[in-house]
Image 1: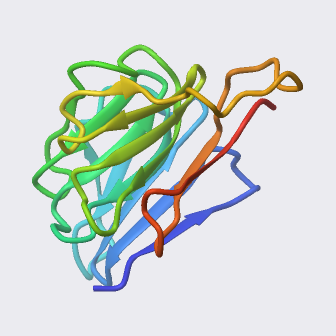
Image 2: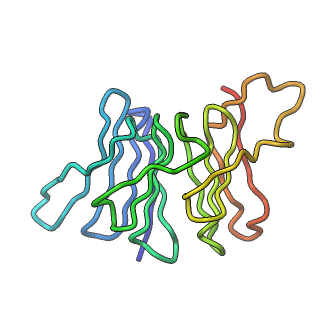
Length: 165
């Protein structure tokens, strides 16, 4: 299955996750708090029940394509049924803007979230989260916002994060 993540400057918070030729997840923001899926060749779009607010990021488990993650202005949401239903994370970035989510390609239960208050890490597929920001700030960075977090695909113990504005 080919997976593509696109982002566009036309709509600052438009994120698209191409799951397969017949399935697209789209997060729209700001001011539109929904995710949609193309449900077939007729081009029909269906609003999905994601209630976390504006969708800033989407990610998919590389082993189980039905397991999806959405970073919203209300925290991290997880779906285990290809986006039909969503549940919020139980701890960690529950009331934070989550700008990016990275899934470890080797161990998909390990996730990182870039938030308005640093980096959070989950080792259990997004059920619980802990702050993992230690060591990424220096004296030049005054803003704890992390708009982007990426896991090195060849060395998953290496995580890259952008800091501040």
